[in-house]
Image (cartoon, rainbow, N blue to C red; front, side, top):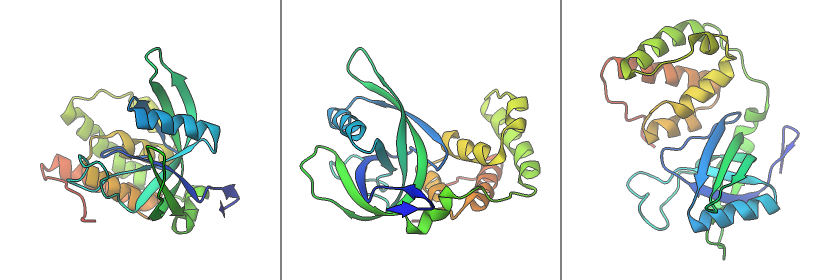
Length: 214
């Protein structure tokens, strides 16, 4: 399938991992050690070099085949390091979000899906303007990180391109899995920025942030 000039596969392996968020343009480091996912990485490197990240639904992650959220993000393997114990350290770089059309029957030890990218084709377009967001975000972020005792290089944060900063914060800050899914399902960067600011404000107010229902 071709979306905005980028050729994307119609089907691919998925890595169900609760609490892990990959967004377009973001980089997600992963350590792969389960045998089925070692096979998945090897197979991916022999084919399109892509893996879809998707969360299992709440309370099902301990099941062998937990039900998956219907929206995930396709990532390209941009770094792979085979370690001495046979494990892999990889980095996935987010390409485009997808909707799961169906899970495919397969003989592989890992799961595969057929996906549709049509609803998320704007992920491959230039980032939208975010007027006024940085001025609202940064003071809340500073207070939030100080509350958690996290030291940050503020010169680097303040100089970072805003789209990359929002994507990185959404991925790395300790938000609940349902909140991370809300970032994934927000239409675009402006909505993700508003969600980020809201969650920081809720955390600073001491409110539990379970995220919107799905």
